Image (cartoon, rainbow, N blue to C red; front, side, top):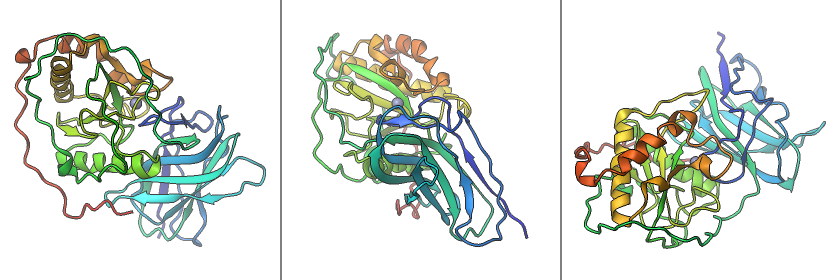
Length: 351
Ligand SMILES: [Zn+2]
């Protein structure tokens, strides 16, 4: 019997990362790769070798990848590129639904990175997708930079659209106390560089995965953003409203982070759905009214730094969203009733 393992590394040509630390790593600017491998053979055979990455601008000591790993019997290793690379095993955190991240810590230094994947007893055909690769010096969340807070009229009694609470996705508690950030004056749109989810249950799983990735992978105190909006138009609570986020390096103060679940950029090319854009608009109108945020203060992550985020296919919707935010909340379509909650019993976030 012959089986195949295809390792498709969806590595975008420009930096891409879900949160806000470090830089994206590309390999010969390739955006996707497939590597067939027969299922027979000795364990520890190399299934995938990235070769040396493109040059990495700054020093790094951590390599962090995330993606989809249907068969857990794959080991990942990272090394600093050299004629005789010293491979370091990556610590893999895999959720029962196959979402995974993996991290290696190396001595700090510069130079390109290299990745490989080894067979550790693959039992079935599989396709492994690496959604993003980052290299950086791991550091705690960046301290806020005090900035003036321009503010419009505030309507304190305005109703918030329905938001699925953290308890629905079984959020872990923050690892440290939050920094209060009670009066936001800007909003930043991101994409998750992850799954375009097709049900509320899948979205809740994905948000929990992102939290695990941010806390244990990046070393942050909680998920970076304040809200996640899925393709069905569900709004999901991430970091609690009124706390300092960790989504826009150097510009987190007064900044509400909203992440669209999915990858709204080539080569994946997810498209924001009408329900999703309506939910972002409803949430945005609430934030505008509640805190006196100017609609023009809705930006994309890429307006603050070099990143693909929130993706070309979401970034084009920002002018339309700003116009929608300028409408009074009363003119907003009524938020839909909360869908019935269904969390898979098997979902435990196990490593
Ligand atoms: Zn972003």
